[in-house]
Image (cartoon, rainbow, N blue to C red; front, side, top):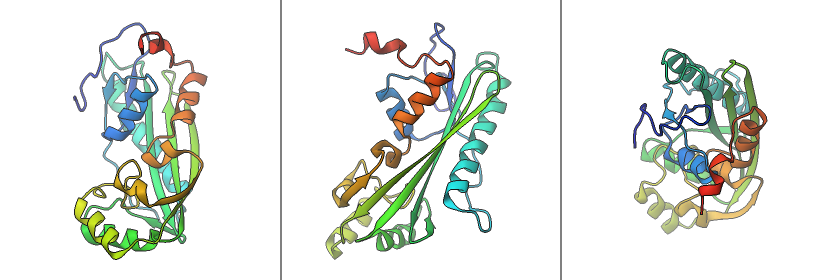
Length: 216
C-alpha cells in the first residue's frame, strides 16, 4: 500500500485525499465503497493546549491535519482539485484526555482508568472541498468497560495491540471483549464515524456511491 502516493488512478470522479496514515480509517472508507486517490499523512503536534477541552482538541487537530494535506495537494497537478479528508479521535475518562499510548506504562495507565467505568470517544472530521470550503462534524460515543481482571490487564498489555491507539485500546480487536455497553457510533471508536463521513462527502458533491454497482 502506498503512503503518500497514488492509491488509485480513477479519473471518472473528483479526487479524494485522506490526510491519515491510519489503516483503520482507510479500511472504513473502503468499507463504504470509497477509495482515496492518495494518502497524505500530516505530522502535527497532538499535545493538548493549556485548558483545551477534548472536543476542541479533536476539532483543532482534524483541521490542522487537513490544512497540512491541503497545502501539499494543491501543489500537485494531479491533486490540486481534490477533496481533503482528515479526522482526529480523542478518548476521555474521568475528565482526563488519554494519550495515544506508545509505551507500556501509558497503556497500563489508560487501562486502569478505563476498567469498570464509562468513557467518551470524540472524533472530529474535517473536509476541505476543491473550492477550499471547510466542513466539519464532531461525533461522540459513550463506551463502558467491564472491570478487568489481573489476567486480562496483563495479557492485553502483552499483546501490544494498544500501541498507537487513542486511549490505549483498539475496540475492533481484543479490547472489544471488554465493552459492556456502547451508545453511539461504533466506527467512531474505531477512528472514523462512517455514517457522518459519508454524509459529509455526499453533501459536498463527492460521488460516494459511484462504485456500489460493482461491489458484489
